[in-house]
Amino acid sequence: MGTVTDRMTVGIIGYGRFGKILARMLRPDFDLIIHDKVKKMPPDGDSAGLQFVSREEIIRAQAIFVAVPIRDFKEVIADLAPRLRTGTTVLDVCSVKVYPALVMQEHLPEGVHAIATHPLFGPDSSRDSWENLPMVIHPVNADDDIYQGWLEYFRHKGLNMQEMTPEEHDRLAARTQGITHFIGRILEDVGIEPTPIDTEGFRDLQMVVEQTCHDSMALFRDLQRFNPYTAAVIDQLMNAAGKICETIAERN
Image (cartoon, rainbow, N blue to C red):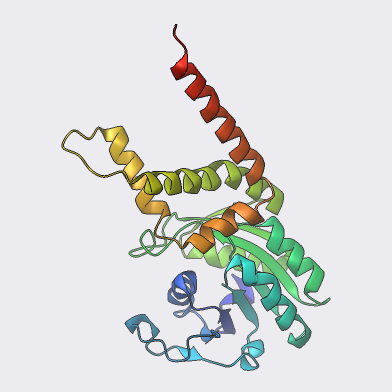
């Protein structure tokens, strides 16, 4: 696992829903510092003992995870980039990958390592263990020893690491995550409720709503807007729905 586990200082920008998960994962292994533009003294019990620092102080971390909404990512990176020290590693955790990879390539200076990641889990699935939870990773612009160090760190945590390019990730995600969240929002809007005659298939649909609609509507919009492959997949889905409706209307 190399120098990644040598009690170095690791920073997190953004202490929202996923920032809290990151803090829980990283705090046993690193000297952790956190910056959040809103939260200075978070009230929840998970925050006890965490060190919250200013925007200026976060750059002393040797590695910085940027865990902000996708729509805010470019602004945060552009603000952070001129102040970073050579040798710092920046890791994103966005649910899309082409967009943040391009932003990091464009804005981060030479000598700063950039790694793209997408942890495909949330508070519920990671509550008891990290074992076999999926996570995508790609070295956008990072020395191999730095990249391999983080890859092995996450594997050591038990995560099921998937190495793939941002383009491959977004193509696959558009047909999995994108469709699932899209259908989940439709079902929520329809207002499906349990009945005394629920089938197993209907209960599966209810689970889709539960798994997708706990996230904010802002995140749902970001998933649809910032994945360059999602619009085409949604068009296919809507065209297929139209064809099924035509089939229903047919007399024979």
